[in-house]
Image (cartoon, rainbow, N blue to C red; front, side, top):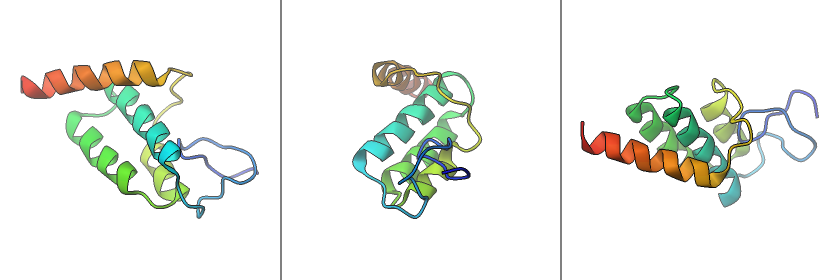
Amino acid sequence: MPGESSPAGKHSGPGSAPELRASHADRDRVADVLRIAAGDGMLTADELDERLEAALTARTRGELAVLTADLPDTGGRTTAEAAKVKDVIRIQQAHS
């Protein structure tokens, strides 16, 4: 429905009302978006850590949508690409 947001902060169809409970898959998708954004330089390592913690403990889709509302779409990048980004961030944090 118009005006509703998906867990990735984008508009979506019926059944995605923000007050609906978030699933593990919803949390994983948001975590992927956050990792890609960090890899693209849109989030600092600290911001990524804060948002990932919030994503993993979110109870509703609305709580997840807030975490990515200020980020652009990932352009359809895959979970495998997000995993690579996570490894790069882990390496950067180890050298900080």
